Length: 272
Image 1 (cartoon, rainbow, N blue to C red):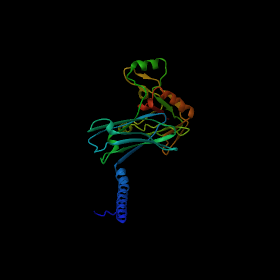
Image 2 (image 1 turned 90 degrees about the vertical axis):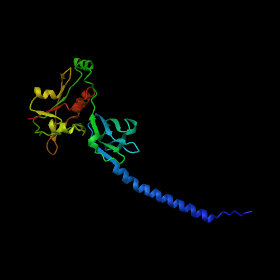
Image 3 (image 1 turned 60 degrees about the vertical axis):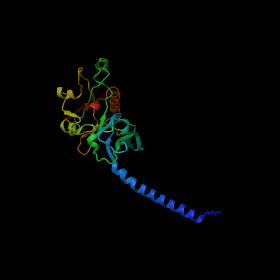
């Protein structure tokens, strides 16, 4: 009969060897993962206009590798950074066409947002396939609904800011701020071609038929009824930014709750 004896020293050496090997593997993972994740993460940041709803989407063709891409939407402000939404591209589209859409209503006290996409080793420029648009809350194609709003004079179709006498300078991307520091309008999601060709506002010395086109709802039922407000002051390095009172800002927010004309860049600034 054989004598089976347990070698305690051998077991201890074996366990110690396995523990050291596991530790080394963990160190390698911790060291390598942040580098690869950071390299694969693409980010695009944009300012947030107050009381706005944004749709963030991308439509990316081609295989993304073994794992689906993840798109995450963060907002940033004085209170910190917050994850508002996160979604995998695999939930939509097909193997060769990845479509993801996220909606964001501007949270209180948030000044900017970041879209982060884990592209899984794909070298893609976010500006090539990522779209950020401000969404209007009125379907102007439904003529009956629009007609009812028009009949009861419940809708404004654009914003006219009177800045005459304030020595404002014209600019391609002016911004309108409230006294409390909220960005009321900046056209932050306007396409590059529009910024270059039209600008996010139209300027003029007085209201003219040409300027009224900017604040008109087009379509089968064309309608013009802009909200006209007075600017308080001009500021900024180039004197292109406007300041409005809190009372005026509230007027604009109330009008936007019915029809968000700022989503259509329907803004006119009167200058000297």
